[in-house]
Image (cartoon, rainbow, N blue to C red):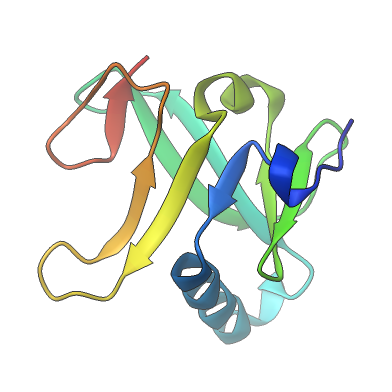
Length: 116
């Protein structure tokens, strides 16, 4: 149950997001064997906040490979992130990573936290 295909991925990433992630991984020497961990934790202005970090796979992770990027999600976070999409824009205004989460009843203005 730890490996999934693109159709079954807990979190999907767009091609622009994958390109930026690969670029960031290439600049970080210690990240060569790591994937993108996407998680949620208590905090933020709406109760839960998103986090992303380069990390190694853990035994209970749900994993997927999208556009050449390994995406890792722990079981707790998967409950909140199922169906979420991560996109990236290099726009001067509003640029950066954006998470669209169908499980969020309400999101804050900054887009970094949500209410489940």
